[in-house]
Image (spheres, rainbow, N blue to C red):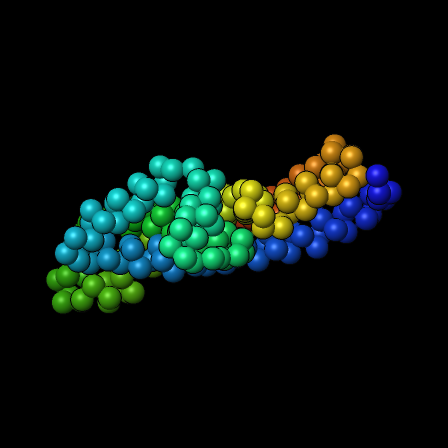
Length: 216
């Protein structure tokens, strides 16, 4: 058994937490870009967009993230594409995030009164102008709190990337536990770090919700 001090454990977990943060940001930003594209395609009523986007959302919301990670890592290899755990985790989490974000934002756009759409149409605004000047700003006020809150789910979802060998916070905790045989101490530190990452985001989401609702 390797003699690790509490500081040694915490320091190594902090180093691994960098990859948890990096993966979370990539998945959240990438998911936001894909989710926005899906939302616009749906709003614009492009031919076939509605059933395709609805099926996409149902697929990624209706299957476990763990299975999506396995398919991204092992499934692509069946087609001759050997991807690293980092790429597979980023891809799976991006697609997973996009499915949830596009639904969150669709609900926020639908929350804008129909009269706003009709008024902007009467002003001869095209769809891009409607979203930019009329509907978008109103939907944004509703969307910010749940969008920020979803980031917490993304951060926690990165823990599942450990099953395909991606070394983030949870995987580092498992490796340190195997070396120290002190699971309670190690995973207590892991939990503390996840809390340190997620609590400020949750508090910020709640604060934004109160602030934006108070401005109505």
